[in-house]
Every structure is written in structure tokens, then in C-alpha cells.
Length: 449
Length: 173
Image: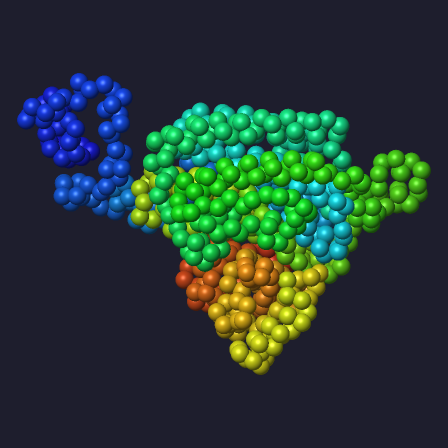
């Protein structure tokens, strides 16, 4: 009776006589492995041989190509990504990503909003890194207006963006490890993400899509007690990161799924326009926060974690290290938080403070004009880019002189990075493809818009 | 970003190396350099900027389209190039008409332009001649029209619920 998996002959009592069963009992009187203690047997098992293709058996002769849809409603596709897979047994021979299932026309809707009303729209694109979307858009409009952002606002933006980067990476960590079959990690990761969302709620009133960044600064100053809460988070988070690493970095199954899997070279990634942790995992220290500092990033001392090989393990390590660097940046930003206004005092762009409305006629007029029409932007076009948790997040704004943008385009890193999935996935096992999607960390809301 | 002198040097080099009339205009606004070239020359210009320029722009950060209504020619395609050594960005743009929206494809030069070109085709109807796989990315395959053009109305697509699904274009499907 052939074994359905290995094709080896199995005798009636279930013990194998040929093939892979080197440690199994055979008829020559070798020791029965069941006699050895369980822990010792476990050490002798090597998972690597299971990945080798089965040759010379009936399975290969009967194999044929099989086309199957993975998604759009597949829990491991991190949204509604549809992959048209051509399978040869468990091997992925060809892969075609199909997107557009959550296309909501945000870019088109932005053209019908005044400039300050666009912010909530762009925040909903990449729904895990909303602060970054708002930042990319606000910097583009500020460049068009040639408006300076006060130093305190720049620091507050950095604090919120780095908190958001940690929250985004935590969500990636939880869901990715879940895809690999480890259940508990998502509970730990979301527990810490909850602390960050509470902080967002404290500063802006919203946990997701806070609309905290405004053109010219931020909506409000941070409330009393916010700094203390952030510092509390800064003390517990490194310990929690140690705990995650203790759970994962010595987990044999996790390491086998990560190390040496889906290696893509630096040149291939650059050719495809891939940025962010995927590119840094190949050893390329490209990070816009360092290369072209914006929003006072040049004031802070931080490192750019890079990998060496460019496999899944490097991608995982790079993101874990980035969380620690983000903590370091937040700490410095809190220490050096400058006093002063948190939004520009240009009344043509930013709303006047509430107390002025009762006493100043001019403030009332400005308030009325801004709320009803919004500010106008002189004709021009800019492209401004920042470093989001997934790579270069660019925003192109075309102004035609009215109070509504003529075009808002977001260069979403997930959209460009998705092109590298073909290189990672084709020729790999279908289980490794799941890991590749997880390590790619695409956000379909950002891809489809 | 290249400064005014740098941009002028790049424009002169392009004129010398590609064609005399390749460059339509070079603008520096808000600290950002933008080179406008004629659509026929875009492959040669980008090839020069990527391979032969003294400071090559070898990374295509973004490719996106826009609609300059009411100006003519209406449609624009932007190539945001990046020199990662000097950390300089250069925008290259081409303009084309709605009537003949054809631009040569540069997907051989920049593989990463593949998806972004398909998106520009999807939303603006710009046809990239020579593109290996020019299909819609976001809108349904049988969709008619290019929704990001400025003359495409917002709300032009009916929202279908059970009570009005017979009004939709796909009711026989």
C-alpha cells in the first residue's frame, strides 16, 4: 500500500520500509524510534527534507498544472487581493495579482473637496498608516503654499508618525505570524497596539483616521498627561519587543519558514521601484528620513536597520529593529519638544483660535471664509515623498488656482511593492507564498484607493 | 533637487544627446525641477537620463497621470525620477491630447512602471504603445470611460442596491 504523501510502501502495521524513513524501524532489527524519548526524536527531525521535490514516484508522473484563484476573500491575503495561481502540485508556477476590489475612487473624490477637507479622504487609503498619508498630503500642499510649519508641530508630527509606525509594524507582526500558523502572537501585538491607539485617542479624539495633521501644523496641542503616557509606553515597549523575539527567534518552525526563503536581489527590487523594509532587508540603507530629512528628522539620532541576505528573516528582523529605532526617536522628540505654536499663524490657511472669534471681527471673517470655501492655492504642481512603514509614500498635488485640488495622486508603496510578489512567489511552495504575502505587508486599501 | 543651473545643464545635455527639439520646457517651481519633453522622444530621454547622464537618474519613484483641463494638450504623464546617490529628484512630463493619447512605453527601462502605467491607462486612457500587458488595474475590465479625466462627472456611477439594481449596466450578468 503506497503512502499518499511519500509514495513509500507502508506495511500493514503502519511502519515504513523504504525511502525517507531512515530513522524508522525496519525489518533489519534497527532500534525502534518509538523507544527513544520524545524530545530526542524531535531533535532528529529535519524539516528541510520535506521541501525537496519528490522524484521518481508516481506522484510526479501524474502531475498536471492546475489554475486556482486565491482570494479575493482569503484571510491570508491581507485584504482583498486576488491571485490567479497556476499550480504544479504544491509549487506555484505562475502568479497573476488582480487588484481593484476595494477601489472606492478616493483620488477622484478628493478633486471635489476643498484642500483641508481632503485630509480625511487620504487618511483612509492606507488604513494602517493614516498619519503618514496625511503627512504626505499636507507636506505637498505646504510646499505649494510655501508655508513654514512651526517647530513644535514638526516634533508633534514626528511623535505621532513614529507611534503610527510602531502600530503598523505591530499589526503586520501579529497578522503575519498568524498566517504562518502561530496563533498567540496577534494577541500580544494587538495588546501593545491598543496602547498606541489610546494615545491617539488622547491627542486627537480618534483612534483611527484622526485627522490630526493639518495644513500648516497639527490640529491641537497635546493634552496634559500625554507626554507621561507616551513615556510609560516607551518603558514597557522594549521589554515587550524582547518577549516577541524570545517567542519567535528560537522557534524552529518559524525560522525554517523564514530563513533563506524568497530571496530577491537588491537590483531586482530597485528595478521594480520597491522601497521600505523590503529594500533595506537586502542591505540597502535607503530611508527618506535620513536621505532627504523632512519634519526635523535631521534633529534625531537614529539608525537604519538593514539586512544581509534579503530573505524573509531579514525582512522580519528589519521591521523589529525599526520599532526599537522608532521608540528611540520618540524619546528624543519628547525630550527636545520645543515650546511655541502648534499650527501656523497664517490666518489665510489655519483657523483662528476659538477665543479670538468672540472679540475679533477679522478672525470671524477668516473663520467663515476657511470653513465655507477653504483657502485657495496658486496654480502649480508638486510631488513630495516621505518614508511610510512600507516605503516611499509620495503625494502629487496639482493646483489650478481654486480652493479644490485638480488632482491628488498618492504613490502608495504597497502598489509598487506588490510587483515583487511575482519574484518571491513563483517557483516556491504555496505555503511559502502565504509567507511572502505576509512579509510583503501590502495594504489593499492603499493599493486600490 | 537640481537647482536652476543644474536643470538648465540637464536640459542642454538632453537637447544635444537626444534631439534639438526634445525639450519643450524646463521649470523650477517650489524647489522642484520639471522637464517637459515631447512624447515621441520620451524613450530616448529617459534612456539617456538613466544610462548615459553624468549623474544618472536610475530609480523611477512614481509614474502618474493628470488632466490639465481646460489647457491643451490635456493629458499629462509624469515620471518622477530619483538619483539615489545625490538624492535629487527630477520630474519628466509629457503632454498628449485626448484625441490621440499615445505615448511610447518605457517599461523596458523601468520594470516598476508596469503597474503604474496600467493605472494611468485605466484612469486617463493614455495608451502606452509597446506595453506588454496594458489592461485595466482597478476598474472592471468591461468598464467604459476613464474616470479620472476632469470631464468625467463625480457621481456619474449609480450606487446600486437591491431596489435599483435593474438600473445598473451589468444587470444581465
